[in-house]
Image (cartoon, rainbow, N blue to C red; front, side, top):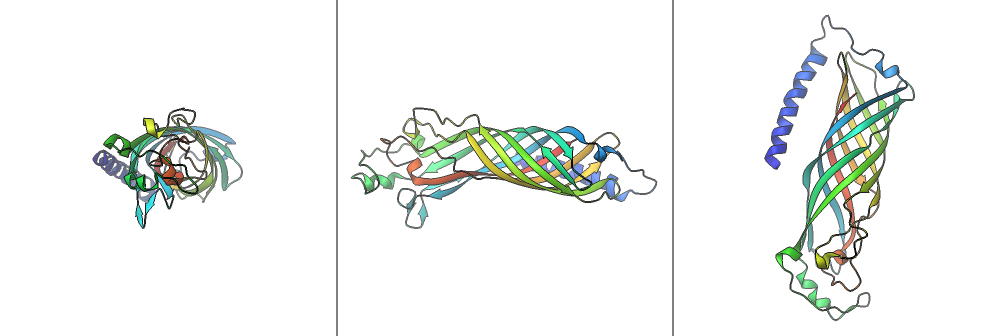
Length: 261
């Protein structure tokens, strides 16, 4: 998977270098493209995204930590997404953008929490439980997610320089996880990892817009960071090997986006 995305990034870099050469450095006898496109009140487009998604964890000091050792680890993954663009012009330097997308990803948790057997007699804040021997299947949880990602962004951009201009954007996201399992009766004791369905995040993005004769191409880098805790606790009778060791779990994502308008 890593080799695939590495090769993809190399190909994209070569393509972008060619575009930069054509757009920025061959300036002699070249006319400005799409001169009036940014004056339109509304415009539309679509975009593709190469993503890296992970969870940022805060672990419970009793069930998720053994001294300074973290008993729960996550593994990030590379994935992809695609979305639509709706743009509203505010003035010469500001646009409002709505960019709904589908983001697909798969992440992995590793639970090295067999040592929690020491709390089987109960603690002041937890009930007694019957220890179980964790199998390899118990220790690893593969969490698949499909987010309906709806970011609302305020974009600020500089003046055009030939057929390009830089921009930065920031805003908030509503993210609906279609594979959250939040209403499932089973939990991690039956192999089901549950997260919240409705989530909120904030997003920041930077990039450069390139103007061609028929369309505008925008490569950019975006970071998206969840605001709310996505964890859904295991059932009360489940031993504290899984969700009990996690105080908060929040998605963080870094994306390379390629927009066409």
